[in-house]
Length: 206
Image (cartoon, rainbow, N blue to C red; front, side):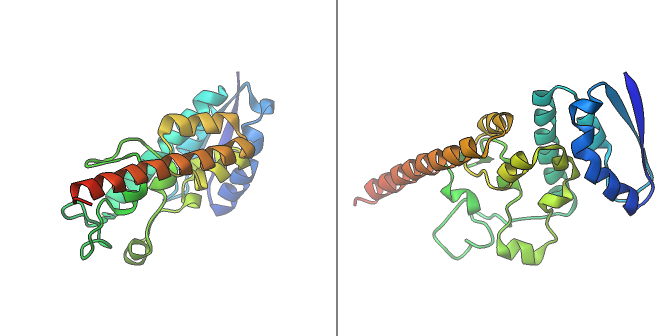
């Protein structure tokens, strides 16, 4: 296997590298191992290089997905980004009857948070949280540039989905399939919310 040194000494180098990622992950570099020489502060491209060195497409997508989720969690932890939950209510719900924050509309919610790992949900922040903190953005997560354009579109808007089904959608790399799944998930979630409301009505004697 050949090796290729990636030297990143300044912002110009990183921009050039980012523009070439689509070539580096193509069949042209199937038998090439990338080695990083990184002198750029504050931006870590080691995970991008790791992804490019995974030549199996399915394994690469799995790695990208899980690494991106970890980067979001780590960023939120370091920056102390907090929805200020008290008794199951986020900062927007303290004076309302609602609970479980943004997740109140999702069938995957539980009393201990999400029962799965959804990268789209992890990248969603309400307006109040955005005003209070500098939140991580899609473009901040460099490893997502290793996905196809279609899959980057999917990552931006695939709510109400389990990690396993999310990954299957990324494997298919199809906007048509994704659009169908979005409709199915909206219906599933609607059925779930209807059951919840029905149970609440029964409990209240309605």
